[in-house]
Image 1 (tube, rainbow, N blue to C red):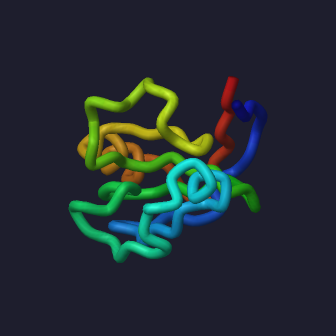
Image 2: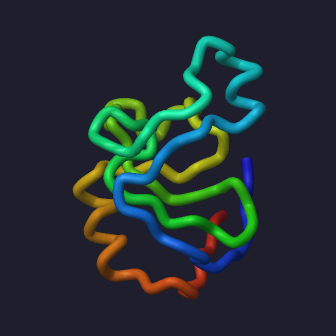
Length: 97
C-alpha cells in the first residue's frame, strides 16, 4: 500500500499500458505492452502522480474496483475517472491515506 501526497504531473486519454515489474512477477503471462483503448487495463483516462508509478485511472473491469488486484494504482469506473480528468488540472495535489 502507498499513502502520501503527490501532485498530478500529467494526464492522458486512453493511455497505453505497460505492466510494472512487480505485476509481471505475479502474472508472467501479461502482455508487455497494450495500446490505449476500451480493452486496456488503464481504462478511459489516467492521472499520473509525481514521479511514482502510481496513477488514478479507469478500469475495463469495474467489478474488481476495491479489490487487491492492482499494483498500487487507484482505479475508478471509466465514467467517473473521465469526469475527474475534466475537473482536475495538472499540478493538483492528491492526498492518499
